[in-house]
Length: 374
Image (cartoon, rainbow, N blue to C red; front, side, top):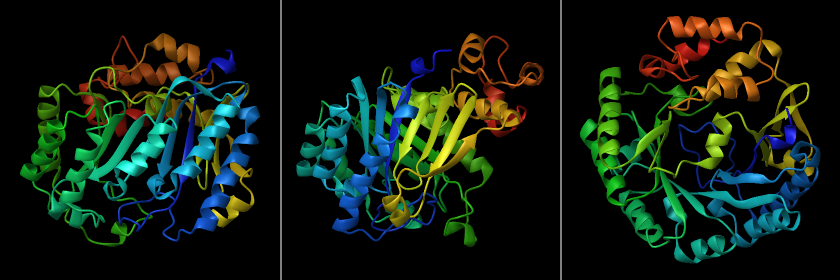
């Protein structure tokens, strides 16, 4: 296999937030100053410069500025990163360049600045249009701010826009969730990231007793989402992703189809295919440590016994799956037992017999399906 033909994406982690949401387990900081901002951008550029072996002569098919809240960083600092990538000829023609926002930071001046330097896809963390749900999530914006943000971005027709919504929130009703979906559809956006609230161990919520909706209510919410989104022209192409036809996110799809990605910034993850296996790594998490030494990472080759489940965890998120031929061509490191695990999953009715994809039953019980490949 020609390693230079494996598509490569770039993830840039900008860690600052105004506050830490109680359900968030991302690597963030709420203590931002101009000196650290300047130093971080310089370190990110150093990080990219030191990564040419991993880049291996390729150009990025997608770039994603995530966080944290990237929109808390000055536009001229974002421009420095993009200019460096352009000067080094590291961006593929027509690459998807995405940028995360919170509603509070959406304004014409900032949008004009970042769109002029190449950002062509926006991702806005709305989460809900219901103030009660937003309060349960302890978000720092309200319904009015969300509406105001969507009114502004709806005028940027040359930029693709997506929002995030969360369901399964404490005391969230089905009616409230349906209203969220209908409001989203009314703006005719091209993409929706729809997440069920999960309580991760390293979060504030994990320490509390929360009244999460029952499994029956969660299932009703998911059925409502399918009905409303399908009727408005959106298709589910991945576990948490819905889009209009032809507007699937290139960056995340590269993750799920086992492409390579380079992560820069504090705590950023990378996955690079090498001749002897799959290399996964993690940058230093602490902001000051990363600024001091952006080149250092902690990582290694994925153990051979973990490759099968690593592949399943990614490909099986995709609703339509992939051909068995693609698995054979792209996944050189599957174990000798992979075929037996696959036949077992097919016999249980969890994997399709003509394609590496979860059946309706397998998609509903996706964790169980994936675990068959452990």
